[in-house]
Length: 69
Image (cartoon, rainbow, N blue to C red; front, side, top):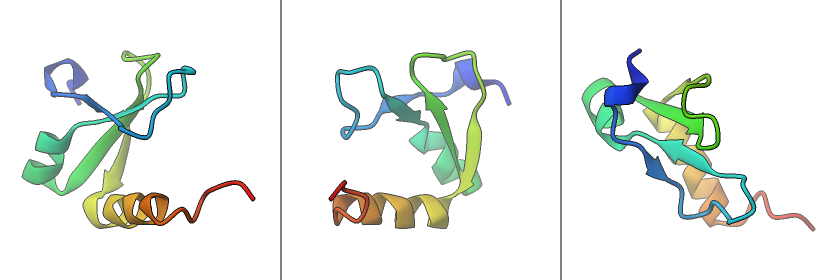
């Protein structure tokens, strides 16, 4: 996949401490898979996640299901 042509957006949940995740929503709309990468390594590996699984993950994050206790 040619990742340099994708429009990457940084997650609003990413902190300023360097743990940033980016995703490419236009690719997700066109293909049904969501590209995800580490913003610190833009030429590094890209995970392709099925759109439904990504939506479930984001929903769980918003619900606080991954918050440390």
